[in-house]
Image (cartoon, rainbow, N blue to C red; front, side):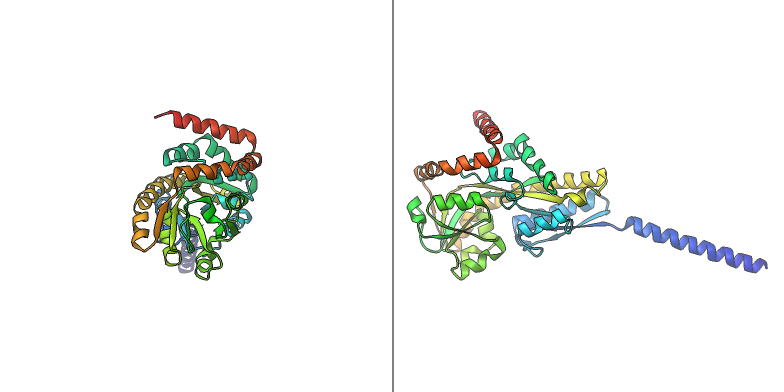
Length: 339
């Protein structure tokens, strides 16, 4: 009888211990986060995604793990945005331009010749204007964490050097799926064709389009020099990326988990901007070495383009709201007045 009692006690203890260890295993199972992006792993986007993932894992003590998935493997930006809104994907980084159809205020960042340099960009994006636009995303099922830098956009094409506005006539130019970009380049005389970035290289290779516009880093990392002969330094738009989270998923996180993600996003932002700017500084030389013929748009021609785009500016102001437009102009004046 005593033996039977001891056996039962031992069996019960083992079962309880087993259940305890099973519960502990469940407790320490890390929260997995899919973080999608469009460029390849070797790009500035890919390097910053890796920094973000490493920082999240370190700061959470291994309780949160980010799986960074690049090369548009989870779909183009607009597809990932919808996956986040629906709660089918946790995080991504992508262009603010592809968010305009979701949050109209994002169109502010597409304004041609709005931002002149990195200092203006950082103050505007990280200050009250950037916060106001970023926070609008929550109404649409997304949470914006931080802005990364894509950079100043420049033109490439396979037909001719673009020295004047007239040189754009007849050029089939891929633009983002965004009405501001479409209207701007149509106004400047190009045959603007909206297209997902994931389709772009093939379209350039098959001459479905003649050219495109992106920052130096993207032109280099995407190997557009293999299918484009001419590059014109226009710096026509400062283009940000934004790190976004599914609001459905975000609302399920604890405050501590949200803080881990926000802190890691800021670390990745600071890394990414420096990395992007360092790379851009040498990318033009690399592209020249790859055989691209590079010219720079003159200040006089940039001014001509600005004058031509007056109606586009009025449309952007109406779309984003006159209050936001005027606040932005006041803020830029203030930034430019300080040394």
